[in-house]
Each structure stands twice: as C-alpha cells, then as structure tokens.
Length: 558
Image (cartoon, rainbow, N blue to C red):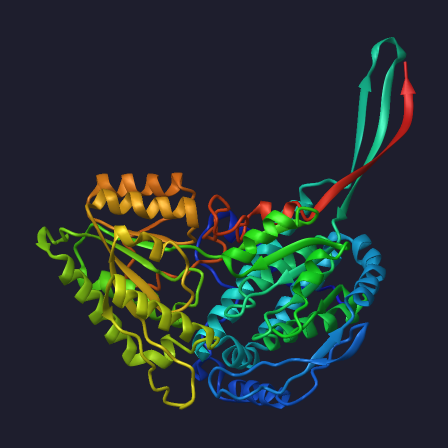
C-alpha cells in the first residue's frame, strides 16, 4: 500500500496547527477561475459531469435489487436521468459488518493515510462536483465550487485533524507499578485499544450535502467506523461521487469497499427511517430540518446522535458609522444561495425609534429602505449570488408568507423570479421582506427555508435584544449579528447571546457574513435547539470510539 500518511503528513500537521491557533488557512483552491486552473480542467470537469447524465451510476455494493433515482435540475427543470443502486439495507449492513474488523484493527496512521488520500482525490474532482451540486442542490457554480467544494473539504480535513488528535491522546501501552502493603510491588503491563462504535449513518441535506457530509464521514471513518451515506433524494449525485472516491481508495489500500456505501432513495420510496431504526446503526449524523432533527435526538437514543439543523438567525441594529456597508453586508446574506443556508439571516430587529448613524438619527423606515436598496443592488448579479431554489416547495412557502404578510404585516419588498442569463427555465426567486412588530412574533419564530426575512419593529433596542435572544433559547440559532457603535450595548448583546447558547458576530462588513471559517469558527454551539453538535471540536469525534484495556501481571517484587 502507498504510504499515504507520510505523503500527506505535512497537510495534516498544518491543519492541526491551524486548529490550535485558529488562523485563516485553506488547503484547497476556492476559485474555479481559468486564470488559476487554465481552461482544460474546467472543461474536462464539465464533460465528466455530462457523461454521468442518463446513466446507471456504478457503485460496488451488496444487496442491489434494482435502480432508483429521481433528481431534477433546478436550472433546467429536466431529470438528470442518473440511477443508483436500490439496496436491501439488511444485506448491505451484513456486508458492512463483515468489512469492519480489518478496518477497526488497522493502526491509526493507516486509517488516517486512507482518509487523507480520499480528501486529496476529492479535491481533484471539484469541477465535476460543482456541476453536480449546481444541478441538484441549486447553488451557483461559484458557490458550488467553493462552499460545497473547497470549504467543505476544509471542514472534512478539520474533522480529520481532531480525530487524529483524539486518538493520539490515548497511548498504546503503559507500564504500571504500585506497592500494596507488605505484599510487595505489583507490576502490570497495560494495553489500550480504541474500539469504534459501529456503523455510522450520515444523513445529508439537500442544499449543502457535502459541507456537513465531509466532516461526518471523516470523523467516523478515521476512528474506525464504517459510513453509510443517505443523501437527500434531490441531491444524490454529489454524494455518490464522494462514495466512489472512498471505495476506490479503500480498494487500493486492501480494504473492503463496503466501509463507505450509499443508500439512495426517492420521496416516494424513502429509506431514512429504516436506516435510523436499524439495530446495527450505532452513530447518526443528521443535517436538515429542526423538526426531524429534534425527533431523531428524542427517539434514536440507542445510537450516538449528532445534529445540525437551523433556527431563527437574527440581526440587531442599534447604530453604525457605515450605513451603506452594513446594509450591503446584511443584504448579501438575504440573497446568497437564495437564503437556503443554515447561516442565512432571517430576523432583522430594528428599534421603532430608529438608529444612530455617525451620531445622527435616522428613522426605522430609512433603515428598511436602505436594506431593500442594497438587496436590489445585489440582484444585479443574481445568477452568481442567488443560484436557484432547490425545490418547488419553497414557492409554496413564499406564497403562504406573502399572504400572511399582506394580512398581518407589511410587505416591504415582494418576491419574484429573476431571469437567469444561461438557464431560462431556472427555478428562481428574489427576497421577500416583511415588516412586522413584536406582537407578530409567532410569524417569525420558525425557520423559513428560502428567501424570506422579517423586518421586526421593536419597542426599544432592549426589547429587540430580549426578543432575539429569547428566540435563540426557544427556537435555536446558528448565526447572530449585532451592529452597534456603543461599547456598552455591544458588551450587553454579546453576553445575552452567549448566555442564550449562541455565538455572535459584531459589525461584520466587507465579507460574506454567512461565512463560517474552518479551523477557526466553531459552527453550531450545541447549546440551543439548532443542533447538538459542533463543527468541529473534539466532542464531535472523541465519542465515536471508546477505549478498552488489557492488564497483565508481570511480576510481584518484595
């Protein structure tokens, strides 16, 4: 077998250092620009993607009883025509069980080397995976290459670094000696063995299937656990491509390819519950809706469960010295990926009396208009920034909230499709912005997946803070933002958000405020209903294995 651990050790060491010191670093190129890659690689990647359309996707898996798949491109509204193995889960799990011992017994460096090589090869298919992500998850090409490509790989490498750190903290053996009264000293030789929990089921979301998929894969695989991917029925192809790479590398290393497998399904033929309830499922990683995530946490206690869902991500505006910069930053979040991100801003809290800008007072309506104008400016580049809607369900949500907004609030900016310059049939929608008061809080205390936001007129800045942090406690939040030039209020707001179990960012401008940086940002706290797990910390990996030991008496001396 190739000595992949030695080959990639420098990358691993850099990731370990970045995790320790929390600085900005990426192991992968984030831009698909031909100025960086030349013209051949992007063209070849697109051609490889197109060659997969209309074909039976090849995977080496036991229990295939037919083919399944019903993905439709949100850009063309046409079926991809790719079919995947429809597997008998019991047969598949039996094959996985047979494959596990050799992987469990491999040393840490061997498993790490395989995982590092998988990352390296996945990085080489970013162009075709970007197209696959576009035409399933609905992201723009740039977002698919960066957010679901390079940034997702960084999150995977980050989880791998923490897995290595957790495993290396346990010595393989130790010599122990202690006297027990007049009987002399007992000498023991102790051995410590890392034992994986078992089969890990990785349930991926529709819009960013790999951003969470990679960390869960490597946290489990590196610690000795086989992984079963269960992608969303709308977004199977990007995940299948990763599974193919895993199986190829495992086979080259002399391991059974059933250590990483795929269970595809459709909405009409779902497989999720059978995977969750299978007696051999030992670990569950879930990314998706808060409702289902909460159900898994409550009803799948036999397994080790890690969830990342969503919540009422908020912005509080108290004051600013750069009004245009602030509006631009918030508007970017409302537009990016059509607000189909777990970090997208939804609830914008503004005091009814207005805010201060450079020491001068401006009204609530002026703030709202500034945000609307910034959104409209961003939409000049909608194809790059917004992408498409992942499903037609979001149109129904927009229709429902437009009606509620007309009845109970004030529609300040209506939603409508934008014309995509390359794909005339693309499923698109621009941001819907609804003005409400705190008396309509039942409207905005749920996550609305898609381009829907609320301009919440608070009685005072302190009622804004109380409302926003109360929503964190009750409904969850992954990102929270405060804009203020008042040091006292900033301190109060940071404490209030942290005590509610949320992270908070202050006065972010000139960068995508949705961005969560691998090796630096702890993504999800586990302290509010938006999820119980963090990407990425030691807790995300350390419980995926346990420690068993052997004690052997060597001698007993006087």
